[in-house]
Image (cartoon, rainbow, N blue to C red):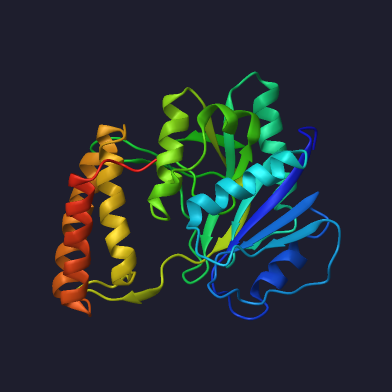
Length: 294
């Protein structure tokens, strides 16, 4: 890995006992530093064998994912890291995750390309299905799959994403005021607008859990993912902010249809119906009335 020191940043929020400790153990030998920010309030009591490579920060309040990422990246950059791997507490990295992403990024940088980040194929822990990388378009998104090499895509989720901190300094940090939802999508769009590429690495995988609970819509075989009212609020608010912040029109058109379907389904079919509807309406109101937060 020729790109300098690599650190990992794990954002935790009320993790089950032992979850973060197991994640840290799985990363041993892959990284130069590991930083954990525990957004739990009160702190969740994460413990592991102390060593010079691992640090735990407990701010005592929920900073939100965006602000936690920004603080963590700044700290790792100040300690000499040139790249930072972002991970959620429930991610399950393979033993070659870091080396594979670094190799993918090094190859593209060696070709003179401007690379903002590289990400693995995300495998849903529940279904076992691999998500494709995407290029947004109309009438359909281009779904990119492969077994080797990499591809330039329009979006990388934050978990498993290896950030190039030279590019990060030019693109800017995550939008702290957005707190959690769509922060990685907004950053991806901003990176692409500034001429940077996002790399999807086909031969690198990360198991990851998405969503909180599942439900089945009548007449449908596949389960839909469901978040509680608080998350439904930020999802609706932030998607409106994203519409107003330079998102591609192809994505806005398709996402507005998804938002309409989601509003109907979660208001009529998923309990608590009234709480879901109220949360989404407040999110739509604030997304339209309030200026997008920095």
